[in-house]
Image (cartoon, rainbow over all chains, first blue to last red; front, top):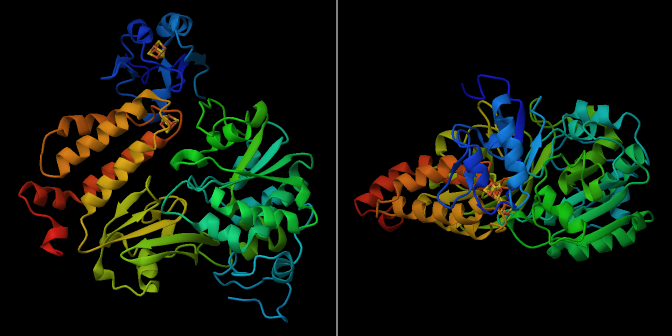
Length: 83
Length: 404
Ligand code: SF4
Ligand code: SF4
């Protein structure tokens, strides 16, 4: 089931000025993020606004927290879902 | 237009010349004679702005009253933005050269009405620095306003870049997960308005919402400044009433509509409009049956010009203007520009790369530069599709001298 069909539990915010395409978030959130040709995360099927604030389902929250912790560039934050 | 010595001291006409009333006479005395003093504070200003229907003139066309209503607290700073990084726009420079006091009025009446202790900042393109400083020095309450020269570049006017510069940074867009009305300059609620927006606001504070609506249309009230260029006409700024059409602008330039192949509306982040769209009204934001004019750029392309070549040049420029902070923008825009050339200039390959850039770049940057660039590229591909086909068989409108 996609995040669209289910109310998202959180948003993963990407600070693109920090992201350096190291890719650990892409591995941790393999169902949600893919790498573009330069290794930067991209959220297929999501609209433009959701590319920087990727909606996560409840069952993706743990992986989201890990991604935030492990991002070597401190580019990620978890935010409340858009109301 | 000059002001006659016996002119009534208040501008009350419904004409579409408002901001440029004092054209050629930017001085304080002329300003007071033309408009009278701005109130120190305007009670019910936010309601008045809502009733007037004033929206921002910097490009995003966001309702002014709504921006004020979204403040998390009294604004710590109010910023007038005239960075004007768009190469096809000079309306802010023309406004500051001819009616700078209206802009300063706008800052002061906003402060007086919302936050008397707010910092008042004017962020101007270096070309307008002298005019801005002269205007501030000339008025008795000018000491309250600090003028700063804007950074260079296309994205310098992006609001988070403005705040970055005024915080001592290099003037580049910043990641801003919160609206500036929540956390802006030094983390405090901040208002940023385009200078033209403030000039309109200063007139509404004087004359009210009904006066503002006495020109333009119900959906697009008041006037706007537009910068017209292309087809060999000298680039110039006009003040037009809301709801003006491209047909009207073309006629006002003394050109035949049939000589115009397409019009770039809204600047380098805007869209090309075909002749079938010329009779549609230009409105702040695109709606059904209208063309969104954003910050007021109208650039004409003649029948004998190649729209693909023109678009290719603009795309290359936009790629060069990436602030090189965000990977998808830094790498993606040159790739988009290269693939656009491959596909449209007859070499043919790169269609999949082009499609991938168009669909994956939007939203993946700290500012909307990738989004605007993709919108422009997509519009060029749509409007000049026939030209692309012609290029494939080795023909070009520019070389062929007009319509085939
Ligand atoms: S882990 Fe951090 S630096 Fe690496 S791709 Fe993800 S956001 Fe970018
Ligand atoms: S999206 Fe591009 S222009 Fe905007 S901040 Fe990032 S690199 Fe700079």
